[in-house]
Amino acid sequence: MNGNTKVMLIGDSKYVKVVTSKLSGSKKTYFEIIQMVNVIDALKHLKESTVDVILIDLIYPRNSNLKILEQLEFLSDDIPILVLANTYDEDFMADTVRLGAQGYIVKNELRNGMLFRSIFSALERKPMQKKCQMSNMNKIRELTLNLSENPTG
Image (cartoon, rainbow, N blue to C red):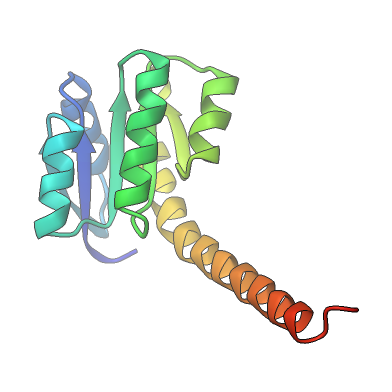
């Protein structure tokens, strides 16, 4: 990963400084941090401009978080999303990944290189995920077409 990587960080917390410091340690990649205090501002920004990856600090009640993540994933379908969370919660982590997050990072466990690796992995996985989804959709479309042309099997 060389060049500039635009990282949108959604959240109003002390971890903005932590994330910025973790990302500024990269020798080969420049990370441009775009901070948004809330999802509404983030969505407005995404209508006008694009980013490479989204980090969202989920500090609200659990059900609200999942709705927020679902909306964000729907409206920024091609952008990988990484969730920053206060605690390790397997059920919540599974829910976030099911809703489209590319990763789940416990904020207190951030170590040097971990955030960079998570971002790099998310940037690599998202296009492959989209390609698999498109391939599956094409297969379903083909099977449906074959069934409609030959309904008896």
